[in-house]
Length: 160
Ligand code: THU
Image (tube, protein in one colour):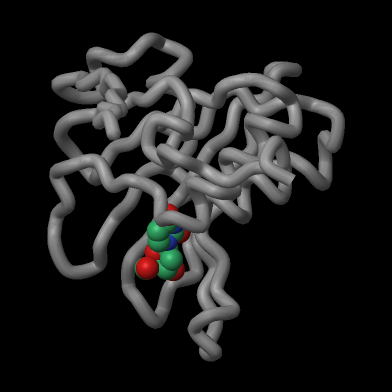
């Protein structure tokens, strides 16, 4: 038996001002879209902006449903829009931000497990890494170079 250690590196920015101009603009687009979140049940708004390889950006927000499991995460909305409108174009980055209706979230919030799996599908589909950039309402910004870093030992089409 041997023990294997899996490592990943996280880039931590002190705040949004430390981001590149491109990333700051993507974050601004996501923050601006938070108002479009349909989240009357959780009162928790999430927005995701994707940057495609053709330079287009698309933004999605969480869309909830009275039948709770029917709701769609912001990442799913954005990635599905990208795939529907530009089926042959890779996703380069996804920027995710959140806003609670009850308190200020001052730390980055990471995508749920299902959304990590969704992002992985687009990485494997186009054979490229997708940078994930995360921010709360204020405070630090995290960036990971690939969803594989936050979804170790993943299951993908390579396993089928
Ligand atoms: N949510 C997202 O949109 N993305 C995630 O990665 C985590 C959770 C949404 C789902 C639900 O509408 C609300 O946040 C509270 O769970």
